[in-house]
Amino acid sequence: MRIIGLTGGIGSGKSTVSNYLTQKGFAIIDADKIAREIVEPESETLFKLSECFGSNILNSDGSLNRRALAAIAFSSEEQKKKLDDIMLQEIIRIINEKIEYYHTTGEMLIFIDAPLLFEAGLDQQSHEIWVVDAEDELRIERVIRRDGSSREEVLSRMRKQMSREEQYKRADHVLNNSATAEALYAQIDKLLDMK
Ligand code: ADP
Image 1 (cartoon, rainbow, N blue to C red):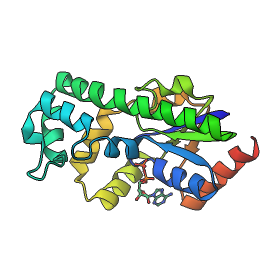
Image 2 (image 1 turned 30 degrees about the vertical axis):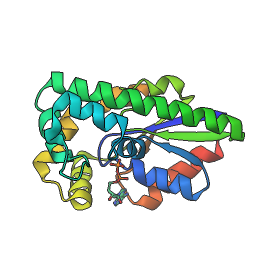
Image 3 (image 1 turned 60 degrees about the vertical axis):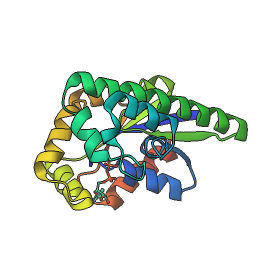
């Protein structure tokens, strides 16, 4: 079974690539989805987070207050590291579980869609790395439109991510998403044809 790691900065188009691959019938392990699932109310990870950052990160119904968590966790490098340690460990464990599962189902090719592919060391498990990218200004506009975030919020998140140069160095293929979605799909089809 071949594993392709799919990554890129915020707003680059990872989900767009991932959705297209899903439509084509490929198995995708979605790290963001796992990250949401592991902090559902009553979960062990949510308990660990509230022990580490305080019960202020919980809403009154026991669900995670993402804004409150972000305010604390992004306040310093040290706090951010604590958050990453708790979250990444569990995300990686589940990703490995899913990889094992796909081994048993005889899947030939699977994708891991992970914004923190390199940071989490998941590139080590991938046979090939695809980085999705688009011009910064387009990424900013697209995220503002998608999430209703402010320009400053997007810029601040972009600054915290791995540089484009570093990502390109580690990529086997870079998908350019500065034009239309169709142009992006054509690049994916070409790479898939090479398989
Ligand atoms: P990521 O998952 O990397 O954060 P998304 O795939 O969610 O990025 O793309 C960010 C936003 O931009 C989404 O709303 C998506 O629909 C839109 N988008 C992605 N690619 C294009 C494109 N080529 N043209 C126009 N909008 C796009």
